[in-house]
Image 1 (cartoon, rainbow, N blue to C red):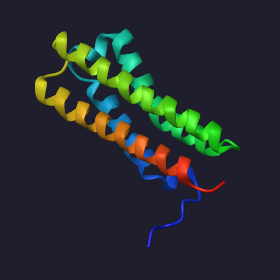
Image 2 (cartoon, rainbow, N blue to C red):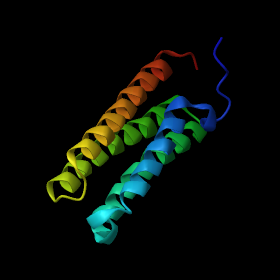
Image 3 (cartoon, rainbow, N blue to C red):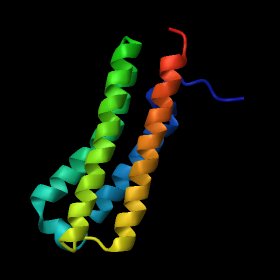
Image 4 (cartoon, helix red, strand yellow):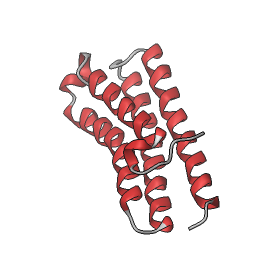
Length: 124
């Protein structure tokens, strides 16, 4: 039996988004990214935006608003994937770091989509 979702902290997608943001924070403290304040800031903002939009949407008063914020969170997962490619192209991260983080961002994006579908199907 699934645990009832009572707050956004109970959401699997929010928990995974927090873990992902932590990984982005840690990797942006390495090598060239540490001193590239523009890309570093963009990557951190995108990563934090995923969990923040999930939380904000959950706290909204309507399903429509919740879905809108989940859509923002999904968009941020795409944004960070693009930024990871840039970090790779300028040799801030290696291929294995790119692939590992890209896959996690894609997993988050897919999980958000699945959650959006579930919310859309649920009763009000």
